[in-house]
Amino acid sequence: MILILRVNCSIVFRVTEIPEHLLKRSRDRKSGDGASSSDSATSAEGSVPAVQKAVAPAKTAKNEPSVVLAKPDSPRVAAAKSRKKIPFWAMATLSLLPLWGFLYAIALKPAAKVVEGPLAVGSHVYAGCAGCHGAAGQGGAGRILHQGEVLKTFPHIEDMLNFVYTGSQAYVSAGIKQYGDPKREGGAHAPLSYNGNPMPQQGETYGGGLSEAEILGVVCHERYVIGGADPKSEQWAEEYETWCSPESEIFKALETGGTTFDSISKDFSMLKTKPNEIGTKPRATTAK
Ligand code: HEC
Image (cartoon, rainbow, N blue to C red; front, side, top):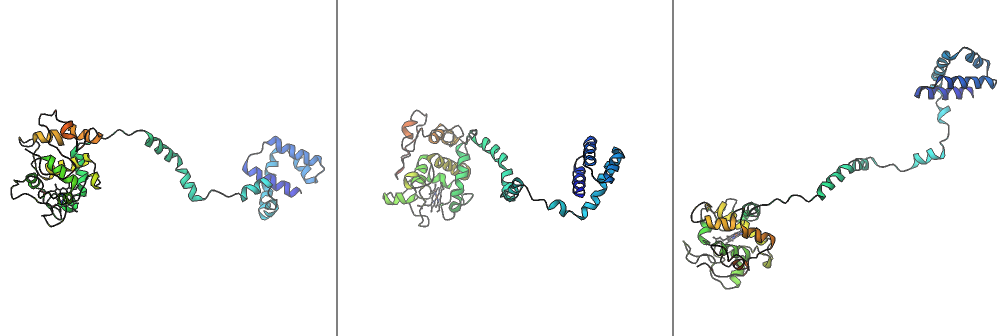
């Protein structure tokens, strides 16, 4: 019994310093109980040696840890030990929760809309055309566009917008024998006349994946970046300002739904150079 008490005392002592008055009280009680004469002697020796005494038996205790460990857990401790713990990998995930919450809050804020002009939009969209027409428009499965070639076919941007919207198959179905400029240098282009393959339709009513604004963007890219039209030249400056510059009102209206390929010639009839009809059905050139 005494041994257990001492062991307990020494273990506690190693963790926290026990105030001297408590040690003294303990000793007094023990001696009052009529404990062994050696304990009475200890208390009589005064307070300082008591500490040494408490430390000394700890060495003995190391040899008999089972005395302490043998104590059964209280129901509460036992429940805590048997309870399922959070697995270590879940801890890693859970510790990221605050970060996730932070990012979520940021994402909820409406992002400032990045306004892109037709050429910026067009350069993204052209990635889907480059596989056939070549990164620089040098041609491949699709016709050559660079070095002014596409400008020869379509001196008027409206005809090119119509052809890219419908694709060449719709021209064949409609029985229209040529697209673009009938007086094209080197001869008018007939649908399926390049290598027998069609230009795939891009517009929504034919199941294509591009919006009308995106079609205008990619057509601007093919004319001004790939085809070589100079936006500052006398020949192209007006077309560029009206259709392809970052300030193009037509492009903005297409993006917001304020106009469509079918209504553009009416919607923008107030412009100095009135746009020709674009339309979403195959047709012969409307340019005069
Ligand atoms: C699957 C291959 C393919 C893809 C992809 C493709 N084209 Fe074509 N494109 C062609 C073929 C083939 C022709 C020739 C059509 C014909 O002869 O009827 C053509 C013709 C054209 C023409 C007419 C050129 C001329 O001078 O006659 C334009 C303009 C054009 N494509 C633009 C585009 C744009 C814009 C895209 C991307 C949105 C695109 N093409 C994607 C195959 C393709």
